[in-house]
Image (cartoon, rainbow, N blue to C red):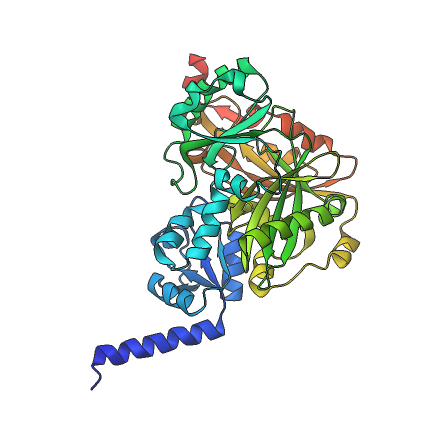
Length: 422
């Protein structure tokens, strides 16, 4: 005879199985930031959002389709190919601890660890130089054996933290002190699954233009491009994340080459129902060189993923969950002679956040032809003032070049006591 508990458990499992039939998605939300746009998307589509403490602390709306962590585990067990989208790599720890999928976890770990990622692609790029090394061993490296120029960065990293381009031996000796200082500055901002400074990677610097791609692999493993952004820099030594541009021309220029590259990645890792933010460098011969792949999300901080809506009029999150593909021919009919940009307002002013009274966002908006959306960020916590989406007409690119090279001091009001001490 069944106990009341057993009957309840059967009913519960039956209801969960019905949920699996009704909906085919799982959404994980975590710090540091979830945009109003993605929350609205979850609500309007009744997507299943996992009720973790972090998500509950960030989102107060009780009307969302919240499901318990335990129910999410059962749903995943019933369908390990279910589309999963996360807004943040802070969720990687939850996935590794709760979802029984060695294949998914291996894919995440390959992409998050840049040394493993380079090993994966070694046969496709046999001449590419890279070297993994422990942080504590960096100062013991013989500079005479290094191949300049090169890039150094954490093997597991995020947001250009402790990333440097080294052109010569003098810069190499100087950068070690900088890295140690930077580590102290961002220590504790992100979990070790997102930024781990135990290991670093030294890798060859490829001349060319850098691009960031938001995409997903569908249920058959075919890549679908949702956006291509040209990551522009102020100089060859610049490694910051200030300006990303997209336009009809940018989308079309290297779309075929990028698609071929994505197919190689998908074939090597067997990706299906898998969203990703991909960064590459393309040289003068149109060769695509990998930089990194960020798993289960689009561009960080719920930013690049939202940009497709402002730039091209479609919702990247819905397209992934529903397996839809952009009709670029139709989209480009109304997107002519415009540049759509994501601007990262990182604090490169040299002014300590504790010395800042406020950031003048109104003044910032006046410096752009058509600001489309502004997301403010707690700069005291993350050293970022916010993110700005803009539309710029061809011929007015100067507004983008100005913000690219700006130290943002124009918009920063320093506290009086700090001013007197300077």
